[in-house]
Each structure stands twice: as structure tokens, then as C-alpha cells.
Length: 244
Image 1 (cartoon, rainbow, N blue to C red):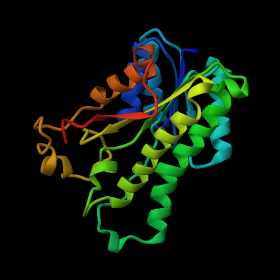
Image 2: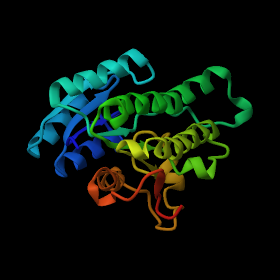
Image 3: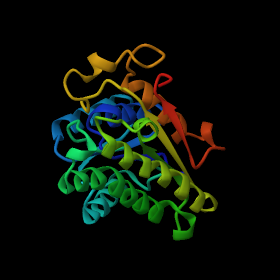
Image 4: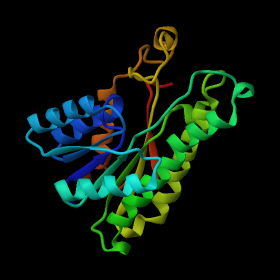
């Protein structure tokens, strides 16, 4: 299997931490970003300082043509892709379901669910032995909210991530005999920019471990799942949520 990994949403937060952890684990890294070129460049530099090759590629992963360009650019620059970290996602301001409108729901489900399906499909077309590929790993970054529901805050986000969990199970079974393992990670309350101001101060100590997690702690699990150390795992998700 190729040691080239593509990380969507790789310019900051969990995606950036995963890119660096994977580089430390021996992967060459394609860092996808949508708008934050400077942050993506810093992630590339961090990967290169670990002795790995890395490229940053701008693409909006809700757009099918841009997804195709993203994959083709990473392959042209680094070689065949052996792993995809399906991490890019969005969240809207907290609120109750009764306050949601169609525009909000379209944005959240396109950004979290539809994009994950499109990226996974592009990965399968390039990695599956049924398409002439050499196999690989797809890791979908979901959320513990998919299980807990996020009442009063982000029920739409939780539902969109529940769809990602279903993708992990279904696609994992679909391509298991085609050389591809599909796994998921469900982070809990993690110190990233996704939270509204004050949210972590308010609920960050509620997990049984008594603190929010760090992006690097999620990244280490992602690196494990991408490796042969998890070779007998597919179609399942790992919670990284401090017991929450």
C-alpha cells in the first residue's frame, strides 16, 4: 500500500494535527484546505521538517469537480494515495431545531455528509482493487455528537455526523474485499476553533476525564487507524471523547 495520505480540511484543528502525526508515522501528506492557505503552508512545513514530502492543495470538497482535481493533484505530486482522512466539516451557530431553516440544513449536510460521501467515492475509485488500485484506508472523522444528539445546540451537525457513521459501516462492508478498510473517529469536546467562544469554558470539564481533549490526542488515534497496527479493523468507529 502506498504511504501517501490525503487529509481534507488539513489546515487547522484535528486535520492539521492528523497531518503532522501521519508524517511522523512515515506518510507523505497531501494537505487540503479551502481558504486558509497560510495555515496549510505551515502544516506542510511541519511535515517536511519531519523528513516527509508534503503538498498543500486548495479545493472545496462539496464540489465534485474540485474533489477530482484535489485527488489528481496529490497523486501527481506525491504518488498513489494509500489513505484518506475524510475530515473537512462545518458547524452553524448553536440553536434549537425549531429555529433551523433550509439554507442552514443544506450547508451543514452538504459540508459534513455529502462531502464525506463524495470524497470517499473518489478514494474508492482510486484505491479499490476492483478499479485497479492497490487498496488503502479511509478514515471518516465524525463526532461524539452523532451519538449524543447535541440537543439545544447542533442537532443538525449531530445528524450530519450520524450519516458519516452510517457511511463508515456501510462502505466498510462494501469494499472490505477490495483491499480497503473504512474506519471512523468520533472526537468529543476537543480544543479547536470549531467551538463558539466560551463553549469549552462552560462544558469542557463535563467529560468523565474532567477536561477537553487536544487535537493531537485525536490525531494519534487517526495515525493508528491508518496504519497496519489496526489491520483487523473495518466498518467501526473509535470514540475519543474522554468518556463522554
